[in-house]
Length: 387
Image 1 (spheres, rainbow, N blue to C red):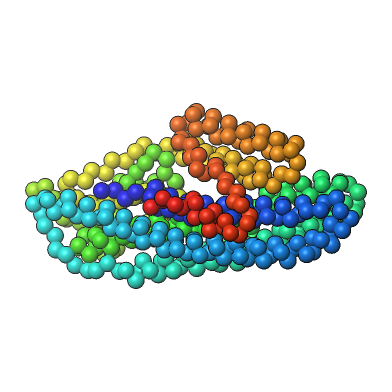
Image 2: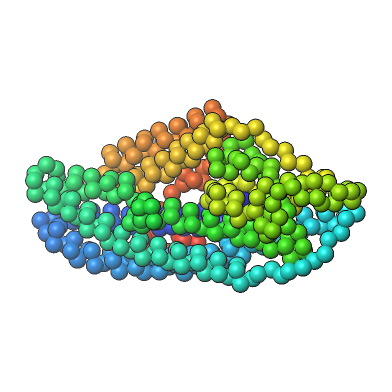
């Protein structure tokens, strides 16, 4: 039974959506406070007070996000590991129906699962501190932008506030910089990190169960649009332990006769070269010598580029919706809706032309009620029912 990487991706996306919704809600909080008393001569003085209120509200709100996300991350990692083990058990059951039998050895390392969950929760919590800092910086930057434009007489305060909010929507709640000096939005970084963790848990569950039953060789899957670093491993036999590489003689599972199998590399080496990257859809199944047939789909580099383009357009719809969430006037809101529609049409047209499935859930934005009493409902809504 092949592993299902879509399960791991959906678990990560559900948690990423919690943070994406939180980003939009925090931007909406900034927009609401920035727009208070725009016509008042004391607007700038009032904003210094609003900064303190926003900081307190943001801290309380992110605290809710932290508690919910930590619990869901724990569940997601455990679920992914369990599903991986279930898939491996079905592989084992199918093989043991054959004439060749295998001895059991080893144990499943539950400590590794707990460590992976703890590592993932810590990643989210580090991101939470960046969210708070970025929210405070974004609000102060918006105030400065409005004040500067009004002083120079280039815009009214209403126009300047809208421009500052548009800039905020374009940048998002950012501030996290990775080791390669790339700046990430909070939701993108959390989802990427969790996608890696849930995929690792899924694979670890599968590996633990196979190795505990004495199995070592697995067959890598294939699909039409692989990433370039994964394509060389499609249809290849890998060793989970790394103890076997090259041509090896094994008993045919159908009749017990000796046969030669080429073990391409260890799983660890393949992963170092890019297999099982955060967006990887490759899986593996237990090798059944003489029965497992590696069928490799034709490599389609254009299909891979089309799939990446579809994801880009879906993110464009989401960004347009975030822009819409911080509009102040009826005219600006109407223009923002038109912009959302344009991006939606582009995503739909590309999907229909290429056959790449459109993921509407990637295009959604949920703007929660900024009242902190409703925060737990907001952050839990996207992950309810996702298993």
